[in-house]
Amino acid sequence: MKKEFSSQGIKYAYNELGQCYLVVGVEEGMGETLCIPTEYNGESVTQVGDFAFQNCKKITGITLSENTVFIGEAAFNFCENLREIHIPDGVVCIAKHTFYGCKNLTGVKMGEAVRHIEDGAFGMCAALSDFLFPSALLRIGVRAFDGCVRLEKAQMPPLVKMIEDGAFYGCENLTSVTFNDGITSIGKFAFGDCVRLQTLTYEGTVSKWRAVQKGFGWNRGIKAEKIICSDGEIKL
Image 1 (cartoon, rainbow, N blue to C red):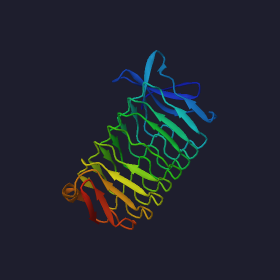
Image 2: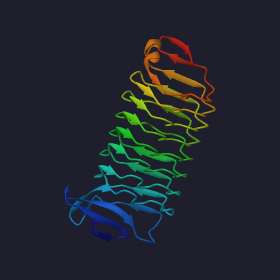
Image 3: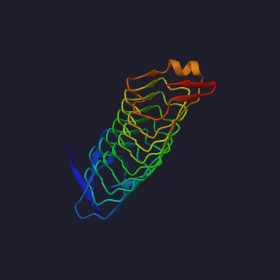
Image 4: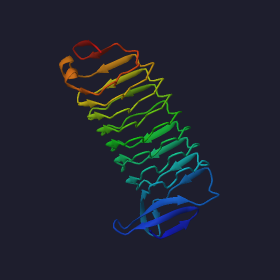
C-alpha cells in the first residue's frame, strides 16, 4: 500500500514510477467544492486514483489540476451531488464507471484528446442533457451512457469506430443520433429502448451503412423507421 499524505483536506500518494503525486481521497469535513492543485510537495499532481472520490455525496464541484493525465476507475462514482466538472486536455481516457451514478451531473467540459469513454463511464447520470463528444474519440464503451434519461442528442465525431453494447440503452429522451461515416460497429441494444429516438442520420452512403456491423436489438424500441444517408434513405 502506498503511503498517503494529506494537505488541506486532500489525500495524496506518491507514484515513484512516474515521479508524481496522485489524489487518492479526501478527509471528512471537506467543503462542497474542491480544487486540486497542480503541485504537491514540489512534484506535479497528474493523476486521480481509482475510487478516489467514490460516494463523496457532499461534493458539488471539482476543479482538477491542469496537469492531470489520468483519472482512475470509478474515481467519482456515486458523487450524487456533483453538478459539473472540467476534464483537462491531457486526459485521453475516461475509465470504467468514472462518473457512474452521478445523478445530478449536468455540466461536463472535456478536453479534445479523449479517445475512449469506457464501460459505464457516465451510466445513470440522470441529469445529463447535453454532451459534446471530443473530436479524438474512437470508442464508446459498454453501457457508457446507460440510463442518461435526459440526454437529447448524440453526434458522433469523425473518428468514432465502435459503439459498444448498450452504450445508450434506456436514454428515453434521446431524439436524434448522427453517425459518422467511419463507424464500423454498433453493439447489441446500443440504442435499445430509446423510445423517443426518431431521427437517425449517417454521414456515409447507403452501401457503407449496410456494411456497418450491427448487434442484435441495436435499435429495439426506437421510433425511427429509417436512416438518412448521404445518398438516400434506407429502412431499418
